[in-house]
Image (cartoon, rainbow, N blue to C red; front, side, top):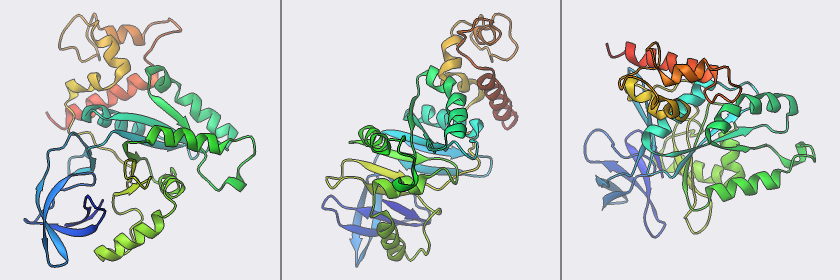
Length: 302
């Protein structure tokens, strides 16, 4: 349910919550894991982490940061203002694709017409690719114009989350904590209890925590710390095109099987990028992001 350093908080099938520790020096368990454990006095010991169906993580040259395991989807929450980073968004989408987890993009602050309009337009290539997208306005209802139907927004969000385990991911200030508090009104109380149980002090942005949205414990929302950087060192450069659907769609038209899509003759991707057809499906920005990421991932390996 939550983790702080070597301590983790687990929940049993009956709903009881217990603090557990790993047998060795390092904890391998992450939020969302199913584990086998043994009680020891008033706490417990992790004996085994069950096999995962997936693991969502980022990796830079220094370390690997695991967010959560056994996910059904990742909700990438961006805000219309301040302007979000397309680079960060693309990295998160690639990490989700690599882990085989469905990504959903949510754009917060729909109550700010001009910034939201610009941001929604900026996201048009992602809608064209086929990523599911939600508009949200996560703030007290009385402060929002009557023209914004927040009830409909919340209903659409709850329908998307129902029966699934969803990690909420995004940069600091996007509204992740506000979203959690909206869907899980008792989240602050639960967070305080977890922090007290683990003797971990203030919790807000320091760890990942799973909350049940429903009493039946079938719908889970996992709140994660905000990030400013998102390393993809676990991705091979030649794997990158297959993790960007718009690039992948044209990579099969390349003359050479080992095409990098950067300079080769007969490249289906370059041909599409250079096309004057108004219906071309690879945006200039997306192709530049691919090129920059390919260079970054290649540089750290050779």
